[in-house]
Length: 555
Image (cartoon, rainbow, N blue to C red; front, side, top):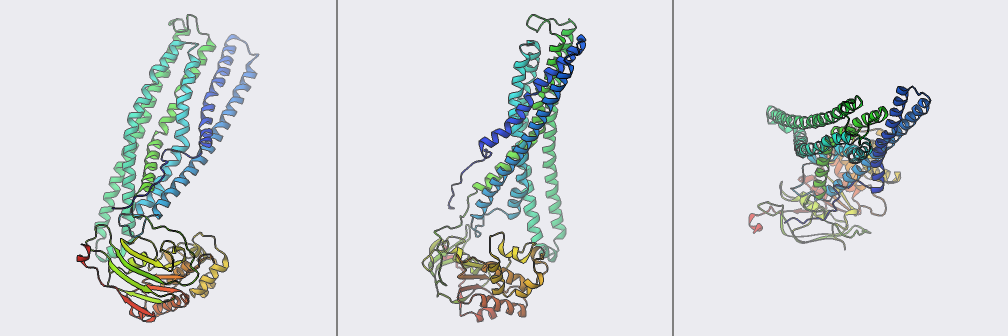
């Protein structure tokens, strides 16, 4: 059974409530200011009809001043909303990334990197319009029509009733459509993540696909995924257009009913509905000006209704990343190792979930302080797994691993890892070594010197290397990986070096150069190398052969 982790759930919150509330209120205030503008316009038209032009200039100035204030509030509110949405997205992404990095790299149930990258980098962007536009408009749609209704009601109960009849139908239909839209958006995002994971996996194995002659079959699979994604995207768009159609239909009916009533009332054909009196031209124009804006917040709501569906689906996808349960990365109190420590393995047992045989069963091993050891085993014999267990990247099923007086998780800060497929990013040598960590230039220079990369550093300087080490030889990439592992501040210097197949896929001359660099960098440190290379194993002080796993050990 996999251990579970308790994760603080905050799926439907949006950061600081005070900041979020201020950004949400401003569009509502701007919408309510239309009442003042409409009153000024209606009084100006009434005065013109009566032949009174004395108040025309002040009323025009009032319309302009209120309009400028509304524009300022809209602009300010938009900036605040997008800034708050960006902060919230950053927090959600950080939570999801922290949860992913907290999972053991040996967990076979981990989500595909392509799907996780799609959710965190691409699909998560749908959260920004949801938080920045939908939530402020939702508040505006709840407040503005209500205030407009009670503004119109004292003038004409008939006009207010006409608006009230049409208004409740809109949210009911939008809610019904919204449930379907959210489910459809979630399905589309799942399909998008599946396609991204498939593409990334096939790109990684492109050489193998060509070698097996499976290019045509792979292209057909990609075409099938693309068609499925197209169908789901079109389904989302159909629902988005349906939402707008429903909104426009009922808002047009409401405005038309008010316009017909006011027109015939002013002509004397419909004398009821004005509390026993007759509406003036000014009052009639005021009601007519408010009627379209009575539905305006709901028009805006229909325009961003798809943002809500996509945003909530993206938030749930990120929440699933944050709450995903799996094999957690072991943690423990951090211990600073003062010198190269010994490694003691007692009764170690480890097996992958669902595997028919354990990788290790009752393994005992002692590595002396400062010793250089080569681990030999056939493919699948557990060499890389043993290094990961020593590094504290997974918890053993049974037994104990001690590094000096610390646990592997506690000593992880003093362990340097050199993998066989280290990824190099497009950037300078220094950026590929620091990986964004604050690090003094002298520390970087010392790591380059230890890895025998002084000539390469002088050649490239601050210039960029290409993605995946383009511009460097295979040996230089491995030495750069070694420099990355050795670049530590004095608080946690690397005292143990774990190297996984450092000379794999290298020609003999380059492999010998990399071996020299590795041994020189490991002077005075404990070095454990997992390898198939007999020449590399001969350069180590001791060779340990791991026995292959047995099915009877699983009982």
